[in-house]
Length: 537
Image (cartoon, rainbow, N blue to C red; front, side, top):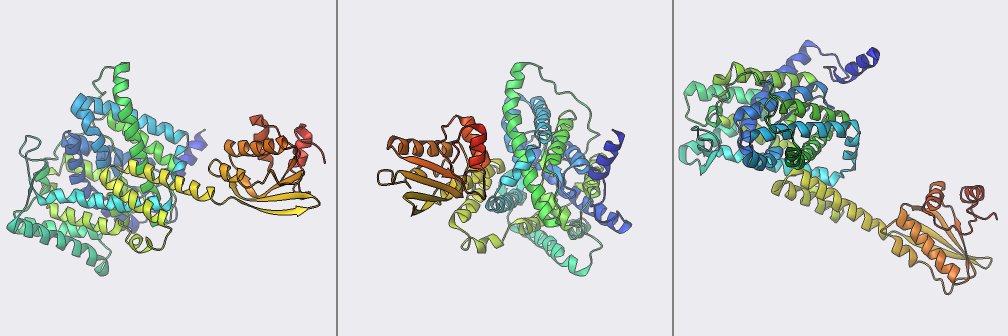
Protein backbone atom coordinates (compact mmCIF):
# COMPACT_ATOMS: atom_id res chain seq x y z
CA UNK A 1 0.00 0.00 0.00
CA UNK A 2 2.73 2.57 0.82
CA UNK A 3 4.32 1.88 -2.56
CA UNK A 4 1.01 2.55 -4.29
CA UNK A 5 0.64 5.83 -2.43
CA UNK A 6 4.17 6.84 -3.37
CA UNK A 7 3.51 5.95 -6.99
CA UNK A 8 0.29 7.98 -6.99
CA UNK A 9 2.08 10.96 -5.43
CA UNK A 10 4.90 10.72 -7.95
CA UNK A 11 2.50 10.59 -10.89
CA UNK A 12 -0.19 13.04 -9.81
CA UNK A 13 1.41 15.42 -7.35
CA UNK A 14 4.70 16.17 -9.12
CA UNK A 15 5.41 19.84 -9.54
CA UNK A 16 7.10 19.53 -12.91
CA UNK A 17 5.36 19.11 -16.25
CA UNK A 18 6.51 15.53 -16.73
CA UNK A 19 9.08 16.40 -19.43
CA UNK A 20 11.61 18.63 -17.66
CA UNK A 21 12.79 19.18 -14.09
CA UNK A 22 11.70 22.23 -12.14
CA UNK A 23 14.83 24.32 -12.76
CA UNK A 24 15.38 27.80 -11.28
CA UNK A 25 14.49 29.34 -14.64
CA UNK A 26 11.27 27.35 -14.83
CA UNK A 27 10.47 28.20 -11.20
CA UNK A 28 10.84 31.93 -11.94
CA UNK A 29 8.40 31.67 -14.84
CA UNK A 30 5.91 29.71 -12.76
CA UNK A 31 6.04 32.16 -9.84
CA UNK A 32 5.59 35.22 -12.05
CA UNK A 33 2.79 33.52 -13.93
CA UNK A 34 1.10 32.68 -10.63
CA UNK A 35 1.39 36.30 -9.50
CA UNK A 36 -0.23 37.47 -12.74
CA UNK A 37 -3.10 35.04 -12.30
CA UNK A 38 -3.60 36.06 -8.66
CA UNK A 39 -3.94 39.71 -9.65
CA UNK A 40 -6.53 38.80 -12.28
CA UNK A 41 -8.43 36.61 -9.80
CA UNK A 42 -9.18 39.40 -7.34
CA UNK A 43 -11.75 41.48 -9.29
CA UNK A 44 -13.33 38.33 -10.75
CA UNK A 45 -13.85 36.73 -7.34
CA UNK A 46 -15.26 39.96 -5.89
CA UNK A 47 -17.59 40.51 -8.84
CA UNK A 48 -18.91 36.93 -8.79
CA UNK A 49 -19.50 37.18 -5.04
CA UNK A 50 -21.71 40.21 -5.65
CA UNK A 51 -23.55 38.32 -8.41
CA UNK A 52 -24.28 35.49 -5.96
CA UNK A 53 -25.34 37.98 -3.28
CA UNK A 54 -22.63 37.13 -0.74
CA UNK A 55 -19.74 39.00 0.92
CA UNK A 56 -16.65 39.53 -1.27
CA UNK A 57 -14.51 37.42 1.09
CA UNK A 58 -16.78 34.44 0.39
CA UNK A 59 -15.71 34.66 -3.26
CA UNK A 60 -12.05 35.30 -2.41
CA UNK A 61 -11.90 32.35 0.00
CA UNK A 62 -13.41 30.13 -2.69
CA UNK A 63 -10.82 31.31 -5.22
CA UNK A 64 -8.02 30.55 -2.75
CA UNK A 65 -9.21 27.13 -1.54
CA UNK A 66 -10.50 25.78 -4.86
CA UNK A 67 -7.47 27.14 -6.68
CA UNK A 68 -5.01 25.60 -4.21
CA UNK A 69 -6.55 22.13 -4.01
CA UNK A 70 -7.11 21.74 -7.76
CA UNK A 71 -3.57 22.96 -8.42
CA UNK A 72 -2.26 20.24 -6.09
CA UNK A 73 -4.30 17.25 -7.29
CA UNK A 74 -6.10 18.34 -10.46
CA UNK A 75 -6.02 16.46 -13.73
CA UNK A 76 -4.08 19.01 -15.75
CA UNK A 77 -1.15 21.13 -14.48
CA UNK A 78 -1.57 24.67 -15.76
CA UNK A 79 -5.30 24.92 -15.13
CA UNK A 80 -6.61 27.60 -12.76
CA UNK A 81 -9.82 27.20 -10.76
CA UNK A 82 -11.79 29.59 -8.59
CA UNK A 83 -15.16 31.27 -8.15
CA UNK A 84 -16.92 31.60 -11.50
CA UNK A 85 -19.87 33.47 -12.93
CA UNK A 86 -21.44 30.31 -14.35
CA UNK A 87 -21.94 29.03 -10.79
CA UNK A 88 -22.75 32.41 -9.27
CA UNK A 89 -25.83 32.95 -11.42
CA UNK A 90 -27.28 29.66 -10.11
CA UNK A 91 -26.43 30.46 -6.49
CA UNK A 92 -28.16 33.84 -6.37
CA UNK A 93 -31.70 32.47 -6.03
CA UNK A 94 -30.66 30.01 -3.30
CA UNK A 95 -28.98 32.77 -1.28
CA UNK A 96 -31.93 35.12 -1.76
CA UNK A 97 -34.46 32.52 -0.57
CA UNK A 98 -32.57 30.63 2.16
CA UNK A 99 -29.41 32.54 3.07
CA UNK A 100 -25.68 31.99 2.76
CA UNK A 101 -25.53 29.05 5.19
CA UNK A 102 -27.63 26.98 2.81
CA UNK A 103 -25.18 27.95 0.08
CA UNK A 104 -22.29 26.50 2.09
CA UNK A 105 -24.24 23.25 2.63
CA UNK A 106 -25.06 23.13 -1.07
CA UNK A 107 -21.39 23.53 -2.00
CA UNK A 108 -20.43 20.64 0.29
CA UNK A 109 -23.01 18.35 -1.34
CA UNK A 110 -21.96 19.61 -4.76
CA UNK A 111 -18.40 18.53 -3.99
CA UNK A 112 -19.47 15.08 -2.81
CA UNK A 113 -21.41 14.58 -6.06
CA UNK A 114 -18.36 15.57 -8.09
CA UNK A 115 -16.17 13.15 -6.13
CA UNK A 116 -18.67 10.36 -6.87
CA UNK A 117 -18.58 11.21 -10.59
CA UNK A 118 -14.80 11.05 -10.54
CA UNK A 119 -14.66 7.77 -8.63
CA UNK A 120 -17.10 6.26 -11.14
CA UNK A 121 -14.85 7.49 -13.98
CA UNK A 122 -17.74 9.28 -15.65
CA UNK A 123 -15.49 12.16 -16.61
CA UNK A 124 -14.41 10.16 -19.66
CA UNK A 125 -17.77 10.91 -21.28
CA UNK A 126 -16.54 14.44 -21.99
CA UNK A 127 -14.93 12.89 -25.08
CA UNK A 128 -18.45 12.63 -26.53
CA UNK A 129 -18.54 16.42 -26.92
CA UNK A 130 -18.12 17.04 -30.68
CA UNK A 131 -15.63 19.57 -32.06
CA UNK A 132 -18.34 22.01 -33.24
CA UNK A 133 -19.59 22.12 -29.64
CA UNK A 134 -16.05 22.86 -28.43
CA UNK A 135 -15.79 25.72 -30.93
CA UNK A 136 -19.11 27.11 -29.76
CA UNK A 137 -17.96 26.71 -26.16
CA UNK A 138 -14.76 28.74 -26.55
CA UNK A 139 -16.43 31.38 -28.71
CA UNK A 140 -19.38 31.77 -26.34
CA UNK A 141 -17.12 31.91 -23.31
CA UNK A 142 -14.92 34.53 -24.97
CA UNK A 143 -17.99 36.67 -25.53
CA UNK A 144 -19.13 36.13 -21.94
CA UNK A 145 -15.70 37.18 -20.63
CA UNK A 146 -15.83 40.29 -22.85
CA UNK A 147 -19.32 41.24 -21.68
CA UNK A 148 -18.31 40.72 -18.05
CA UNK A 149 -15.63 43.40 -18.42
CA UNK A 150 -18.07 46.05 -19.61
CA UNK A 151 -19.27 46.58 -16.05
CA UNK A 152 -15.89 48.14 -15.28
CA UNK A 153 -16.75 50.98 -17.66
CA UNK A 154 -19.64 51.97 -15.39
CA UNK A 155 -19.67 54.22 -12.35
CA UNK A 156 -19.29 52.14 -9.13
CA UNK A 157 -22.61 51.97 -7.28
CA UNK A 158 -23.68 51.11 -3.75
CA UNK A 159 -25.39 47.81 -4.38
CA UNK A 160 -23.94 46.28 -1.23
CA UNK A 161 -24.93 49.18 0.96
CA UNK A 162 -21.33 49.89 1.89
CA UNK A 163 -20.35 52.61 -0.53
CA UNK A 164 -18.85 50.25 -3.06
CA UNK A 165 -19.71 47.15 -5.03
CA UNK A 166 -21.65 46.51 -8.17
CA UNK A 167 -21.70 48.98 -11.05
CA UNK A 168 -24.48 51.55 -10.83
CA UNK A 169 -25.56 51.02 -14.45
CA UNK A 170 -24.42 54.54 -15.39
CA UNK A 171 -21.63 54.56 -17.97
CA UNK A 172 -18.48 56.58 -17.51
CA UNK A 173 -18.40 59.61 -19.79
CA UNK A 174 -16.11 62.41 -20.80
CA UNK A 175 -12.56 62.41 -19.45
CA UNK A 176 -13.02 59.36 -17.15
CA UNK A 177 -14.19 57.23 -20.07
CA UNK A 178 -11.36 58.46 -22.30
CA UNK A 179 -8.80 57.77 -19.57
CA UNK A 180 -10.24 54.28 -18.99
CA UNK A 181 -10.07 53.43 -22.69
CA UNK A 182 -6.52 54.79 -23.03
CA UNK A 183 -5.28 52.73 -20.08
CA UNK A 184 -7.01 49.59 -21.38
CA UNK A 185 -5.44 50.12 -24.80
CA UNK A 186 -2.03 50.78 -23.22
CA UNK A 187 -2.24 47.54 -21.23
CA UNK A 188 -3.17 45.57 -24.34
CA UNK A 189 -0.30 47.16 -26.29
CA UNK A 190 2.21 46.28 -23.57
CA UNK A 191 0.97 42.67 -23.50
CA UNK A 192 1.29 42.52 -27.30
CA UNK A 193 4.75 44.07 -27.55
CA UNK A 194 6.42 42.67 -24.43
CA UNK A 195 7.15 39.15 -25.86
CA UNK A 196 8.96 40.87 -28.73
CA UNK A 197 11.23 42.64 -26.23
CA UNK A 198 11.81 40.12 -23.45
CA UNK A 199 10.34 36.99 -21.90
CA UNK A 200 11.83 37.62 -18.47
CA UNK A 201 8.51 38.94 -17.17
CA UNK A 202 5.13 37.53 -18.33
CA UNK A 203 3.50 40.04 -20.63
CA UNK A 204 0.21 40.31 -18.64
CA UNK A 205 2.15 41.00 -15.43
CA UNK A 206 4.20 43.67 -17.21
CA UNK A 207 1.01 45.27 -18.49
CA UNK A 208 -0.56 45.36 -15.04
CA UNK A 209 2.63 46.61 -13.35
CA UNK A 210 3.46 49.39 -15.80
CA UNK A 211 -0.08 50.76 -15.99
CA UNK A 212 -0.43 50.57 -12.18
CA UNK A 213 2.81 52.53 -11.73
CA UNK A 214 1.61 55.19 -14.17
CA UNK A 215 -1.76 55.55 -12.41
CA UNK A 216 -0.30 55.61 -8.90
CA UNK A 217 2.70 57.78 -9.85
CA UNK A 218 0.60 60.46 -11.55
CA UNK A 219 -2.30 60.12 -9.14
CA UNK A 220 -4.80 59.52 -11.93
CA UNK A 221 -8.43 59.42 -10.84
CA UNK A 222 -9.60 56.15 -12.39
CA UNK A 223 -11.57 53.16 -11.02
CA UNK A 224 -9.41 50.84 -8.95
CA UNK A 225 -9.83 47.42 -7.35
CA UNK A 226 -10.66 49.09 -4.04
CA UNK A 227 -13.71 50.70 -5.66
CA UNK A 228 -15.25 47.23 -5.94
CA UNK A 229 -14.76 46.26 -2.30
CA UNK A 230 -12.18 45.94 0.42
CA UNK A 231 -10.40 42.61 0.13
CA UNK A 232 -8.88 42.72 3.61
CA UNK A 233 -9.63 39.74 5.80
CA UNK A 234 -8.20 36.91 7.87
CA UNK A 235 -7.61 33.22 7.33
CA UNK A 236 -10.71 31.23 6.35
CA UNK A 237 -12.08 29.50 9.45
CA UNK A 238 -13.55 26.00 9.69
CA UNK A 239 -17.31 26.35 9.86
CA UNK A 240 -19.99 23.65 9.67
CA UNK A 241 -22.92 25.13 7.71
CA UNK A 242 -25.53 26.30 10.22
CA UNK A 243 -28.52 24.53 8.67
CA UNK A 244 -30.91 21.93 10.09
CA UNK A 245 -29.65 18.45 9.25
CA UNK A 246 -33.07 17.25 8.08
CA UNK A 247 -34.58 15.74 4.98
CA UNK A 248 -36.26 19.08 4.23
CA UNK A 249 -32.86 20.74 4.04
CA UNK A 250 -31.64 17.98 1.76
CA UNK A 251 -34.61 18.51 -0.57
CA UNK A 252 -33.79 22.22 -0.75
CA UNK A 253 -30.08 21.91 -1.51
CA UNK A 254 -30.07 18.76 -3.70
CA UNK A 255 -31.42 20.37 -6.92
CA UNK A 256 -28.95 23.24 -6.63
CA UNK A 257 -26.10 20.85 -5.84
CA UNK A 258 -26.81 18.72 -8.91
CA UNK A 259 -26.97 21.74 -11.20
CA UNK A 260 -23.83 23.30 -9.74
CA UNK A 261 -21.95 19.99 -9.89
CA UNK A 262 -22.91 19.51 -13.54
CA UNK A 263 -22.00 23.05 -14.57
CA UNK A 264 -18.73 22.94 -12.64
CA UNK A 265 -17.65 19.61 -14.12
CA UNK A 266 -18.62 20.47 -17.69
CA UNK A 267 -16.74 23.77 -17.58
CA UNK A 268 -13.75 22.16 -15.85
CA UNK A 269 -13.52 19.21 -18.24
CA UNK A 270 -13.88 21.37 -21.34
CA UNK A 271 -11.19 23.69 -19.99
CA UNK A 272 -9.07 20.61 -19.28
CA UNK A 273 -9.32 19.60 -22.93
CA UNK A 274 -8.61 23.12 -24.13
CA UNK A 275 -5.50 23.51 -21.96
CA UNK A 276 -4.41 20.03 -23.02
CA UNK A 277 -4.59 21.02 -26.69
CA UNK A 278 -2.61 24.23 -26.06
CA UNK A 279 0.14 22.46 -24.10
CA UNK A 280 0.09 19.20 -26.08
CA UNK A 281 -0.72 17.32 -22.89
CA UNK A 282 -3.68 15.20 -21.94
CA UNK A 283 -4.93 15.30 -18.37
CA UNK A 284 -7.04 12.85 -16.42
CA UNK A 285 -10.73 13.74 -16.63
CA UNK A 286 -11.73 11.55 -13.69
CA UNK A 287 -8.87 12.90 -11.59
CA UNK A 288 -10.06 16.44 -12.32
CA UNK A 289 -13.59 15.50 -11.22
CA UNK A 290 -12.27 14.20 -7.90
CA UNK A 291 -10.08 17.29 -7.44
CA UNK A 292 -12.99 19.65 -8.10
CA UNK A 293 -15.14 17.65 -5.68
CA UNK A 294 -12.57 17.68 -2.88
CA UNK A 295 -11.98 21.40 -3.43
CA UNK A 296 -15.67 22.28 -3.22
CA UNK A 297 -16.30 20.03 -0.23
CA UNK A 298 -13.49 21.73 1.69
CA UNK A 299 -14.57 25.18 0.47
CA UNK A 300 -18.09 24.66 1.79
CA UNK A 301 -16.83 24.08 5.34
CA UNK A 302 -14.47 27.06 5.21
CA UNK A 303 -16.96 29.72 4.17
CA UNK A 304 -16.41 29.72 0.41
CA UNK A 305 -18.93 29.88 -2.42
CA UNK A 306 -17.45 27.02 -4.43
CA UNK A 307 -15.96 27.14 -7.88
CA UNK A 308 -14.62 25.35 -10.92
CA UNK A 309 -12.03 25.78 -13.67
CA UNK A 310 -11.69 29.32 -15.04
CA UNK A 311 -10.89 29.44 -18.72
CA UNK A 312 -9.86 33.11 -18.67
CA UNK A 313 -7.32 32.74 -15.87
CA UNK A 314 -6.18 29.39 -17.28
CA UNK A 315 -5.42 31.11 -20.58
CA UNK A 316 -3.51 33.86 -18.74
CA UNK A 317 -1.45 31.21 -16.96
CA UNK A 318 -0.68 29.21 -20.09
CA UNK A 319 0.19 32.27 -22.16
CA UNK A 320 2.40 33.56 -19.32
CA UNK A 321 4.39 30.32 -19.45
CA UNK A 322 2.74 28.41 -16.59
CA UNK A 323 3.01 24.70 -17.30
CA UNK A 324 3.28 23.06 -13.87
CA UNK A 325 1.34 22.85 -10.63
CA UNK A 326 3.59 25.49 -9.10
CA UNK A 327 1.87 28.36 -10.94
CA UNK A 328 -1.57 27.41 -9.61
CA UNK A 329 -0.26 26.89 -6.09
CA UNK A 330 1.60 30.21 -6.15
CA UNK A 331 -1.50 32.00 -7.50
CA UNK A 332 -3.59 30.71 -4.59
CA UNK A 333 -0.94 31.62 -2.01
CA UNK A 334 -0.50 35.10 -3.50
CA UNK A 335 -4.25 35.57 -3.34
CA UNK A 336 -4.27 34.63 0.33
CA UNK A 337 -1.38 36.99 1.01
CA UNK A 338 -3.32 39.78 -0.67
CA UNK A 339 -6.21 39.17 1.72
CA UNK A 340 -3.98 39.00 4.81
CA UNK A 341 -1.19 41.49 4.19
CA UNK A 342 -1.38 43.44 0.92
CA UNK A 343 -5.00 44.47 0.53
CA UNK A 344 -4.16 48.17 0.60
CA UNK A 345 -1.65 47.82 -2.23
CA UNK A 346 -3.78 45.53 -4.40
CA UNK A 347 -6.76 47.85 -4.03
CA UNK A 348 -4.73 50.57 -5.78
CA UNK A 349 -4.39 48.57 -9.00
CA UNK A 350 -6.44 50.26 -11.76
CA UNK A 351 -9.28 48.17 -13.10
CA UNK A 352 -8.31 49.29 -16.60
CA UNK A 353 -5.13 47.19 -16.40
CA UNK A 354 -7.06 44.07 -15.45
CA UNK A 355 -9.69 44.77 -18.12
CA UNK A 356 -6.91 45.05 -20.69
CA UNK A 357 -5.54 41.66 -19.63
CA UNK A 358 -8.98 40.07 -19.93
CA UNK A 359 -9.56 41.66 -23.34
CA UNK A 360 -6.33 40.03 -24.54
CA UNK A 361 -7.64 36.75 -23.11
CA UNK A 362 -10.81 37.23 -25.16
CA UNK A 363 -8.77 37.77 -28.32
CA UNK A 364 -6.68 34.68 -27.60
CA UNK A 365 -9.62 32.50 -26.59
CA UNK A 366 -12.03 33.21 -29.45
CA UNK A 367 -11.56 30.70 -32.29
CA UNK A 368 -11.23 33.23 -35.09
CA UNK A 369 -10.62 30.50 -37.66
CA UNK A 370 -14.14 29.25 -36.98
CA UNK A 371 -15.47 32.33 -38.79
CA UNK A 372 -13.77 31.26 -42.01
CA UNK A 373 -14.49 27.53 -41.79
CA UNK A 374 -18.21 27.90 -41.13
CA UNK A 375 -18.82 28.09 -44.88
CA UNK A 376 -16.60 25.06 -45.54
CA UNK A 377 -17.81 22.57 -42.94
CA UNK A 378 -21.13 20.67 -43.19
CA UNK A 379 -24.09 23.02 -42.57
CA UNK A 380 -25.15 21.10 -39.47
CA UNK A 381 -21.70 21.50 -37.88
CA UNK A 382 -21.80 25.23 -38.59
CA UNK A 383 -25.30 25.43 -37.09
CA UNK A 384 -24.20 23.60 -33.92
CA UNK A 385 -21.21 25.94 -33.47
CA UNK A 386 -23.39 29.03 -33.78
CA UNK A 387 -26.14 27.52 -31.61
CA UNK A 388 -23.76 26.64 -28.76
CA UNK A 389 -22.20 30.09 -28.93
CA UNK A 390 -25.58 31.80 -28.65
CA UNK A 391 -26.89 29.53 -25.89
CA UNK A 392 -23.67 29.99 -23.88
CA UNK A 393 -24.10 33.76 -23.99
CA UNK A 394 -27.86 33.72 -23.36
CA UNK A 395 -28.03 31.04 -20.63
CA UNK A 396 -25.06 29.10 -19.26
CA UNK A 397 -22.32 26.77 -20.37
CA UNK A 398 -23.87 23.51 -19.14
CA UNK A 399 -27.13 24.15 -21.00
CA UNK A 400 -25.22 25.11 -24.14
CA UNK A 401 -23.09 21.97 -24.13
CA UNK A 402 -26.05 19.68 -23.47
CA UNK A 403 -28.04 21.33 -26.25
CA UNK A 404 -25.09 21.07 -28.62
CA UNK A 405 -24.48 17.40 -27.86
CA UNK A 406 -28.17 16.52 -28.27
CA UNK A 407 -28.47 18.38 -31.59
CA UNK A 408 -25.24 16.79 -32.85
CA UNK A 409 -26.41 13.32 -31.81
CA UNK A 410 -29.79 13.76 -33.51
CA UNK A 411 -28.12 15.06 -36.66
CA UNK A 412 -25.72 12.10 -36.66
CA UNK A 413 -28.56 9.64 -36.16
CA UNK A 414 -30.60 11.18 -38.97
CA UNK A 415 -27.60 11.13 -41.28
CA UNK A 416 -26.92 7.46 -40.57
CA UNK A 417 -30.61 6.59 -40.83
CA UNK A 418 -30.51 7.58 -44.51
CA UNK A 419 -27.36 5.56 -45.23
CA UNK A 420 -28.92 2.10 -45.19
CA UNK A 421 -29.46 0.50 -48.60
CA UNK A 422 -29.23 -2.93 -50.25
CA UNK A 423 -27.62 -4.37 -53.37
CA UNK A 424 -29.47 -7.39 -54.72
CA UNK A 425 -28.58 -10.30 -56.97
CA UNK A 426 -30.20 -13.56 -58.06
CA UNK A 427 -28.23 -16.78 -57.57
CA UNK A 428 -29.43 -20.37 -58.12
CA UNK A 429 -33.07 -19.50 -57.66
CA UNK A 430 -32.51 -17.42 -54.54
CA UNK A 431 -32.29 -13.66 -54.02
CA UNK A 432 -29.49 -12.09 -52.00
CA UNK A 433 -29.92 -8.75 -50.23
CA UNK A 434 -26.51 -7.26 -49.40
CA UNK A 435 -27.25 -4.75 -46.66
CA UNK A 436 -25.04 -1.66 -46.37
CA UNK A 437 -25.10 0.92 -43.60
CA UNK A 438 -25.86 0.74 -39.86
CA UNK A 439 -29.09 -0.85 -38.69
CA UNK A 440 -30.41 0.90 -35.57
CA UNK A 441 -33.55 2.64 -34.32
CA UNK A 442 -33.25 5.42 -36.88
CA UNK A 443 -32.85 3.15 -39.91
CA UNK A 444 -35.13 0.25 -38.93
CA UNK A 445 -38.05 1.57 -41.00
CA UNK A 446 -35.79 2.09 -44.00
CA UNK A 447 -34.49 -1.46 -43.58
CA UNK A 448 -38.02 -2.90 -43.72
CA UNK A 449 -38.71 -0.98 -46.94
CA UNK A 450 -35.78 -2.62 -48.75
CA UNK A 451 -37.53 -5.97 -49.25
CA UNK A 452 -39.97 -7.05 -51.99
CA UNK A 453 -41.60 -9.87 -50.13
CA UNK A 454 -44.42 -10.63 -52.57
CA UNK A 455 -42.19 -10.95 -55.66
CA UNK A 456 -39.12 -12.53 -54.02
CA UNK A 457 -38.33 -16.23 -54.66
CA UNK A 458 -38.85 -18.94 -52.07
CA UNK A 459 -35.33 -18.55 -50.64
CA UNK A 460 -34.08 -15.12 -49.58
CA UNK A 461 -30.60 -14.49 -48.19
CA UNK A 462 -29.87 -11.32 -46.19
CA UNK A 463 -26.14 -10.56 -46.04
CA UNK A 464 -25.05 -8.20 -43.24
CA UNK A 465 -21.34 -8.08 -44.19
CA UNK A 466 -21.62 -4.36 -44.96
CA UNK A 467 -23.89 -3.53 -42.04
CA UNK A 468 -23.81 -3.38 -38.26
CA UNK A 469 -26.75 -4.34 -36.07
CA UNK A 470 -26.71 -1.87 -33.19
CA UNK A 471 -29.71 -2.04 -30.89
CA UNK A 472 -33.05 -3.58 -29.89
CA UNK A 473 -34.92 -1.73 -32.64
CA UNK A 474 -32.61 -3.35 -35.21
CA UNK A 475 -33.25 -6.81 -33.77
CA UNK A 476 -36.98 -6.19 -33.87
CA UNK A 477 -36.73 -5.06 -37.49
CA UNK A 478 -34.94 -8.29 -38.46
CA UNK A 479 -37.54 -10.35 -36.63
CA UNK A 480 -40.39 -8.44 -38.30
CA UNK A 481 -38.99 -8.99 -41.79
CA UNK A 482 -38.43 -12.66 -41.00
CA UNK A 483 -42.03 -12.99 -39.82
CA UNK A 484 -43.37 -11.49 -43.04
CA UNK A 485 -41.38 -13.92 -45.21
CA UNK A 486 -42.54 -16.82 -43.03
CA UNK A 487 -46.16 -15.71 -43.38
CA UNK A 488 -45.63 -15.64 -47.16
CA UNK A 489 -44.42 -19.27 -47.06
CA UNK A 490 -40.83 -18.36 -47.91
CA UNK A 491 -37.55 -19.25 -46.28
CA UNK A 492 -34.97 -16.73 -45.16
CA UNK A 493 -31.28 -17.09 -44.30
CA UNK A 494 -29.05 -14.55 -42.53
CA UNK A 495 -25.37 -14.15 -43.27
CA UNK A 496 -22.49 -12.38 -41.59
CA UNK A 497 -24.32 -11.53 -38.41
CA UNK A 498 -21.69 -10.95 -35.74
CA UNK A 499 -21.45 -13.13 -32.68
CA UNK A 500 -22.63 -10.31 -30.40
CA UNK A 501 -25.70 -9.87 -32.59
CA UNK A 502 -26.56 -13.53 -32.16
CA UNK A 503 -26.18 -13.13 -28.42
CA UNK A 504 -28.49 -10.13 -28.46
CA UNK A 505 -31.08 -12.01 -30.48
CA UNK A 506 -30.85 -14.94 -28.11
CA UNK A 507 -31.11 -12.82 -24.95
CA UNK A 508 -33.97 -10.79 -26.37
CA UNK A 509 -35.91 -14.00 -27.05
CA UNK A 510 -36.24 -13.39 -30.78
CA UNK A 511 -36.81 -16.45 -32.96
CA UNK A 512 -33.85 -16.93 -35.26
CA UNK A 513 -34.55 -18.60 -38.57
CA UNK A 514 -32.11 -20.54 -40.73
CA UNK A 515 -28.64 -19.04 -40.99
CA UNK A 516 -26.11 -19.91 -43.64
CA UNK A 517 -22.88 -18.05 -43.18
CA UNK A 518 -19.77 -17.35 -45.22
CA UNK A 519 -17.13 -20.00 -44.46
CA UNK A 520 -14.58 -17.23 -43.89
CA UNK A 521 -16.60 -15.98 -40.95
CA UNK A 522 -17.98 -19.15 -39.40
CA UNK A 523 -19.75 -17.06 -36.79
CA UNK A 524 -23.49 -17.26 -37.26
CA UNK A 525 -23.61 -20.93 -38.24
CA UNK A 526 -21.21 -22.10 -35.55
CA UNK A 527 -22.90 -20.16 -32.80
CA UNK A 528 -26.33 -21.20 -33.96
CA UNK A 529 -25.46 -24.90 -34.07
CA UNK A 530 -23.83 -24.81 -30.62
CA UNK A 531 -26.77 -23.10 -28.99
CA UNK A 532 -29.46 -24.94 -30.91
CA UNK A 533 -30.98 -21.66 -32.08
CA UNK A 534 -29.88 -22.10 -35.68
CA UNK A 535 -30.13 -25.03 -38.02
CA UNK A 536 -27.07 -26.68 -39.55
CA UNK A 537 -26.57 -26.33 -43.32
